[in-house]
Image (spheres, one colour):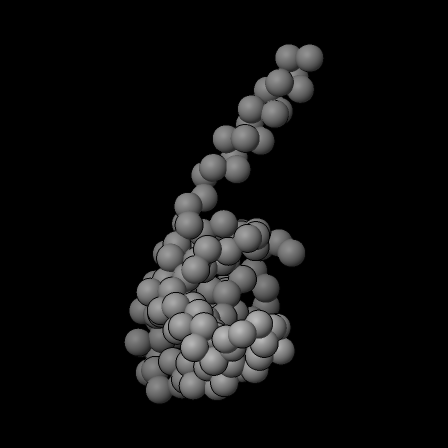
Length: 149
């Protein structure tokens, strides 16, 4: 019984070690979508209308963690500025919950940050991501804290 109680306590404590990270870009994008849906989908036009509005907004302002966002935001980075960006993404990824859940407007998840770092690795450094570390332009390696499904 004591072992079960200890396990349950550790499980609860481990669930609270991550904090949420609210990204301003993502929060503003969410707010823009809500505003556009409210103004364009009045009178119960439903899900199809909202979906159409979201697609239109995403054409101009792509979501974080997508190919479109990475291309728009990171395409012009030099290798040294890419190093700084990967370090920034890693610093954020150390704080966020690795498991996606019910998201709050603007909340970032590990997979989104990882995708952006992988995009930089492949397209700026022209290196394959091998799944356990990122190699910067200087040769330094960064190892993610979390690497799971």
